[in-house]
Amino acid sequence: MEQTSGRRAFLTRGLAAVATATWMKSAFADSCPVLTPPQTQGPFYPGEREFGQDIDLTQVPGSPRRAIGEVIYVKGRVVDHLCRPVVNANVEIWQACASGRYNNPKDPNSAPLDPDFRYWAQTYSNRKGEYMFKTIIPGVYPADDQWDRPPHIHFRVAKTGYRDLVTQMYFKDHPLNDLDLILQNIPGEQREAVVVNFADSLPGFEPNTKTGFFEIVLR
Image (cartoon, rainbow, N blue to C red; front, side, top):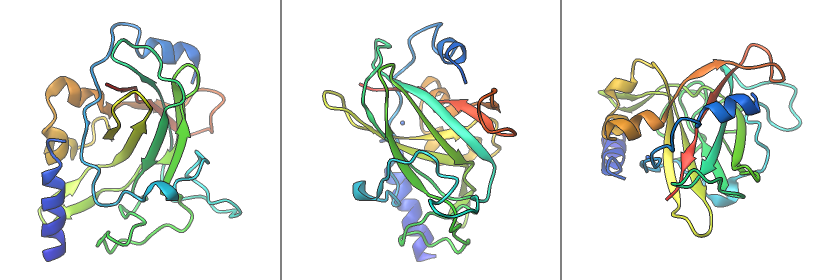
């Protein structure tokens, strides 16, 4: 109980703190998006020295096995408030595996770790501001004995001349979204900006996978 209560207190303190070229173009063609809201980093940030450059989290190098879970692609752009691409922005992600556990000694979750999942990775946006990761949908996990967090992926985005952003990305229509204290603390329009719809991946991606577009707007 002390572990889960402390975890809830940590998360609550952070409440105030958020394919193809045609598809990517249509995702932001209508209007310039709102600034991506900052959200809590949480207690499981792996640390900058832990991040590798391989953007495929579904397989550990040298292993023939795949990670457990539904494979997805997260694509997007990093832009400024005027919709101009931010080139060479450092984009880090970290998340739980399919069981809902982080590969972090601070995680008290008793769910099993997945030895074939990477848990974290980083990349840099290209000259169009684009980035991409291949991963799995993370599992639900208990924030405490009365609150389960919905699936989400943590992001940290940094670029000289811009404010560093730590935020989280959620999955549209997940039933726990409406109950999540962190997500629901974000004002409506900004909340919508971090909830991503996933659809069947287009040709050129791994079959039977889904792809979502998460645009990140830096200040």
